[in-house]
Length: 452
Ligand SMILES: C[S@@+](CC[C@H](N)C(=O)[O-])C[C@H]1O[C@@H](n2cnc3c(N)ncnc32)[C@H](O)[C@@H]1O
Image 1 (cartoon, helix red, strand yellow):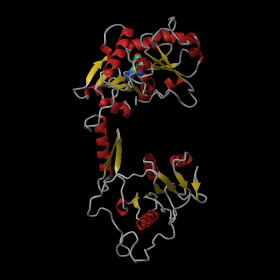
Image 2 (cartoon, protein in one colour; image 1 turned 90 degrees about the vertical axis):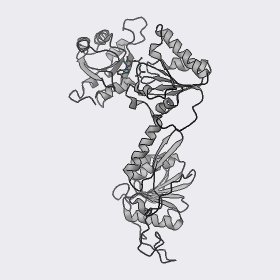
Image 3 (cartoon, protein in one colour; image 1 turned 135 degrees about the vertical axis):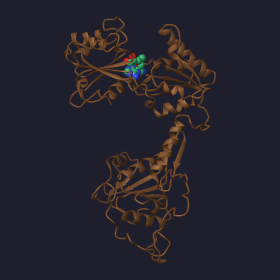
Image 4 (cartoon, protein in one colour; image 1 turned 90 degrees about the horizontal axis):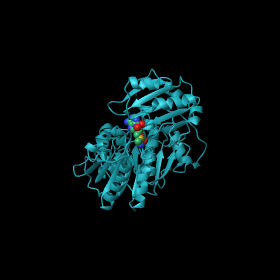
């Protein structure tokens, strides 16, 4: 940790500072308020008559001083680091996150209260303590040094304000609303979402030809990653699975060619080969192809076969991980796959073949011996055989089981049972794929809680 200055004196919250002695200092040369350039005692107010001037600062390699180490400072510092600024935080105490940034040498933390002179050499300053007098003193020094300064406590008293900002594919969106923070944040969020969804055409170049293997998450269109959504909005061809965020397909522009991979004919292996061929053919024809898969592409998704096919054909491929249903389904059904003092291991198992199938690569004896959580995928059809194997190899018959069907979709449902009766319960409730089966003590937790 790069910590400059004397020992930290913690007074109140991380944002608090002891007011320095020169808080009410006046500019002796002209007898005017240093902050105001007006008569003594008159405080300068930003934006009383004029619009604020929105500008993009190049802070790369430039010194920025943040006075205060609380939540506001924390939020600003993260973005300043992203802008390449040389950030110094001056505060007797800081949040754990800011301390972590200092430990990682992303910023310098000077662990003491602000004193006049701290803005020496700064290009930009943020006064973010919880003491208005200290913030005013920082503003006064900034004005004297001609350094733009944001007052976190009183935006209009500073010489700069922080816009609500958001990013999308190399764009930075900034919104100012004359201090109406909720309004600027709402407009920013709406703009970024519109860009992500492709509702606003930002006329960016389509990505270079190639394939993006995008994990679409378990089904809810809001559970795709931001990167996945962005690439989808740029796609010229989309090869989509039966599972995953199908609603997003509907939002694609009409000129996007959508290939339904679940309808590709022939047997399973043949269909996969055809999918591989399609990815390669379209990419070679100069198109940007998104292969939209359910969950995560590499969790029982055959995604790596598609990566290999593209690599062999010399087609560039990008992998965008997704939220796997193995963990999303239990989560939304109120079942934690791990819990302190309950489960120290989680094993995700394919139920594609039965335990006694010679093709099975699963060590059912070991699964029977373990005490932690087993998550079964593709297991509905043979649920009885899996439960029997686990009990045969040592798991107690009363081990709790939860089945989550169609997780994160409108028809999601949860069924509870034990290893002893899961086969009958699943039949009685007409459980059908897609479903995730969670086995172990975690499946018995919170059974009085509603689905989340
Ligand atoms: C071929 S695997 C694909 C898994 C996917 N790659 C993932 O990470 O979620 C299909 C299995 O995933 C599970 N699955 C996928 N989506 C699901 C959902 N929305 N609810 C419950 N299970 C789901 C089911 O076990 C289904 O049989």
